[in-house]
Amino acid sequence: MTVPGVGPIVALAYIATLDDAARFKKSKDVGAFLGLTPRRYQSGEMDWSGHISKCGDRDLRRLLYAAATTLITQVNKPSPLLTWATRLNE
Image 1 (cartoon, one colour):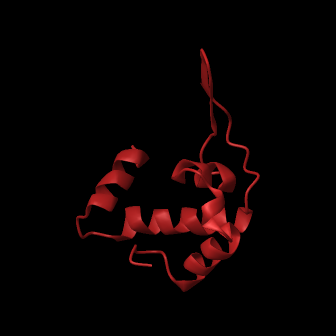
Image 2 (cartoon, rainbow, N blue to C red; image 1 turned 120 degrees about the vertical axis):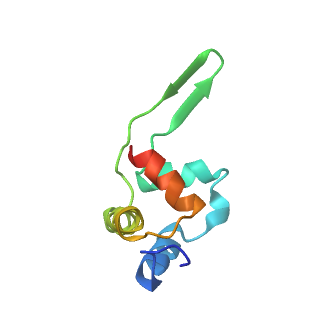
């Protein structure tokens, strides 16, 4: 909740959706679970990224998108997170 745009509703929805964070081996798996990032498949010589399935919780995706938009458009104070988000937005 220290990120601008992330308040109690977004934090509660995130925690409720993930339920038990220990079931994810890597943090990248959370993005794929929520339908935010493509899942990466690696096996022997094959290495490819899957598609964004959007199978996760639609409401949480909307809340996280709104929080990211708030961070990029409304925050003027420089921070490493804002720099990272701005580079992703370009």
